[in-house]
Image (cartoon, rainbow, N blue to C red):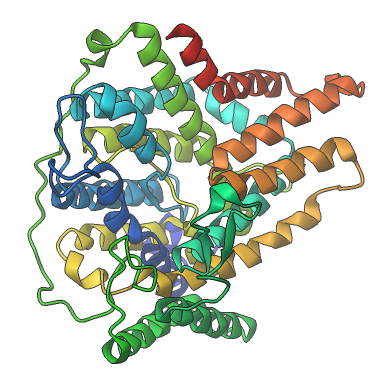
Length: 484
């Protein structure tokens, strides 16, 4: 499928100008959705609960929970609307959904100190602060102050990060049960073997996708995901592995490869607007301020790093290392944070899995419109998209991670004042499961090393501010303990 050059659609999204066509954008949008769709299943399991009387229930200070079906509905709703908005406003193929990490912070640290509506109120405040930082030009200035080498390191680190996500989701890499008593924290599969049919499907899917990409087959990643899903359905019909349920390591992790009894269901959107700003009266002001600061800093740099990596992978970065229209993209991402809180889905942000759609050829916001529409459809088709197990989508993440490694060639590893910060940026992301942590480690080490080696004047003043903020970010725990 191709678009007519000079058509309204072509001009609006600048499809031809970016060397793409309508078919690629649609395929890319579909692939991005497929690799992101797990969030509609996973987010409810992180911040929601099936019942308040279970030991694993995520309760607030009053013992209340967020019901899983409602969380799934608002997760898909906010992701769909904001992903489309990113495509229309910024014209980038950057999918948006509930950010992993912040949702865990809400469930484990913030909500137990207040009510769920109050916790979501803090997320709204965080998003508003991000928007204000964009409107003042501060966030864009910070984006442009980052050295080109560190931007490349961020892209490489993200590649390793999403590769690790894929390996872990597929069960190919697992945390050892006795990790606290051994020097080896993770291992291959179960007892050194893939040892499960779902993981075997992942391995076959990875090889299939890799072969298709190597042969430059159009739609290689999408074909790989769909082919892996079909294989998973056949395997499940024969071996009856069943869902993991969090207890069976040999079962399917997320999504179950069997035809559902029901395809369509009406979403419950009752959580939308269930927000309160009463946290300021429930807790000491300094405690609330620190919580908001943590949310802002994590979202601020997580999104910045993701956009940097995706922009470079899509070839949208200019010769001077800048991403055009970045102000609009950062503005929408800030709105996504506030919208996630207002919708009770937790803060939304740019998703690193968008790299899979970019690898499929997506270069414009049209791909985002496709992804967003699929998220909106997911509100009604939850039983259907749950047929795709995470083991079938994970090969795409590993392949994309490999493709993003090419950015390492732009880093001068002969200059140790660049090499170490770049190295820390790259390795801390996957090792700590956090993009923000990797950026922080790289920025702080960059500023310190440059300063003590007589190159302080080469450091952009904003980098000093950022490094100081990350020092505070890493020290939030001790600060809270000292004040507590």
